[in-house]
Image 1: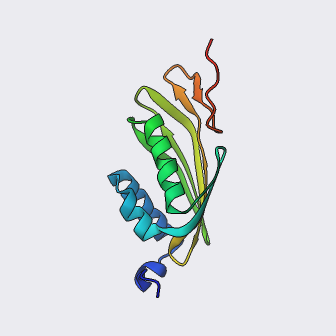
Image 2: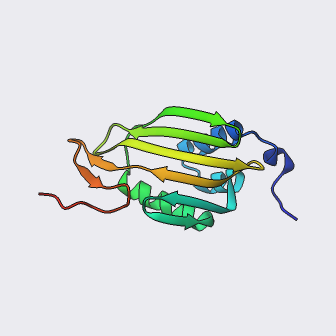
Length: 139
């Protein structure tokens, strides 16, 4: 028997997404995983394919180590059926992201597939970490 409550399973894509963003802002990854992310989620990134809650934890660890501080802004939020799209930036702090873009597929009240794209730059706009996770040589 799936312990996921029926009322959470009945949420719309917009409701799941709003809850996901709220918990992300609060820094509560474990509650977000429990409420909003399927246990067999697939994350597609320039860094490769990550699976399950452990994959989400690893990607969150990478992002937080790359951008430990800064002002996060959600630029665009779009919804259509089971899909959601988010454009985001980090525009203050020692490191910046100008091209953050994620897409989400939501089924039965949980995120089942997510794509993630972002490039980490310094405050002068030089690429520090490319979208594929590589670190270009600096001159």
